[in-house]
Amino acid sequence: MNAPISPLRGQDLNAIKRTLIQHISREIEGNPPPASERREFINKRVMELLSDPRLQLAKSLRDQLFNDVINELLGFGPIQPLLDDPDITEVMVNGPQKVYIERKGKLTRTNITFEDDEHVMKLIDRIILPLGRRIDPDNPTVDARLPDGSRVNAVIPPVAIDGPSITIRKFDKGRLSVDELIVLGSITRNMAEFIRACVVSRLNIIISGGTGSGKTTLLNILSGYIPDGDRIITIEDAAELRLQQEHVVRLEAKPENSDGKGEVPIRELVRNSLRMRQDRIVVGEVRGGEALDMLQAMNTGHDGSLTTIHANSPRDTLSRLETLVMMAGMDLPLKAIREQIASAIDLIIQTSRLRDGRRKVTGVTEVVGMEGDTVVLTDIFRFEQTGISTDGDVIGELKPTGIRPFFTTRLEASGFKLGPEVFGANLSEMLGNNRRR
Image (tube, rainbow, N blue to C red):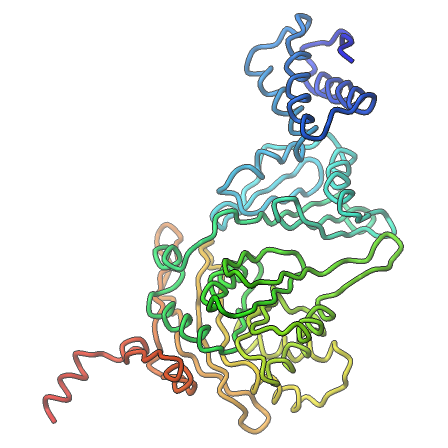
């Protein structure tokens, strides 16, 4: 098991690394250590092999080799340092020679590379094989999840023309609080108090936004407002929500197996949740026919539901919902779909990623009802951009529009008497008018 390695040339670090990995891999296959001791065994063997006097390497190169080999054997290869960096939110591998990251909302190319396409493919296999997924020329795309909850999408040839591609949306290990969002300028305190009142008062709320705009982060925060006594069913494609309440049942969609069987889609889970004596349904994202089941649930007494949707504005959210409902295959008239939406949804919260990379709540909109064939929307809060600074930062302000929502009586019935200043009334002017009277 401790046989000496073959003579190595210090000039060829990649060759040394490959030899070390192959050597230790053979040892593990020939005499596998217990799972609990595997990491300690690999660390020890790498150190022993790197101490071979035939390796004439500077300490910095020896340390680099140690980290590279450990990352290949125990982690996710060259991108492991990127996954360990808490400031990086996304990792994108565009073939073996181009690795990009997103940090603070901005994309940057790194100096990290893979050896070749096969090296990238090995990483993809390492991610998906423990999950029972497969990827091959006949099934060239796959979605998966890392052990820490990070979302992974992989695409390979023939659809990925320039070589296999990996996109990893990192799981946010630190749960942001609403106070932190206020400090970051993502939301104002009055908006946060208003939204909390809406959640506690069992309004049906959709969080809308583009990719990477902070929808899931906000959904986590809003879910935290649900009272502890409620039974909550969460339904997700890949589990990301981390609710702190005691009575939570978490459901996760299941993809088909290698035989093309066994799939359990979001829609089936939404339907099943209605038989689970739930107080609240929280769906990570609606993206298909489950939109119809969700709307029907909201319209039949299942109030207080929360979900997210990909859309760039509240009006786009309605159009997207119409499209998703049509995907359910029920052949409903468009007006009937709009009536379902208008009666089911109370509030749309719009999130956006601004040009400077910051994520912000850019609108809170009430769904008022129907007027003819049109769903009527009213903005309660809105972000107004006024310019761009010399540093490229977006300048603007989150403001109330001065309009009180029609559902104010529902908030008051739940004990929330929000003052006029929350909705933009100027108290000093109001007092002055009262004195003049």
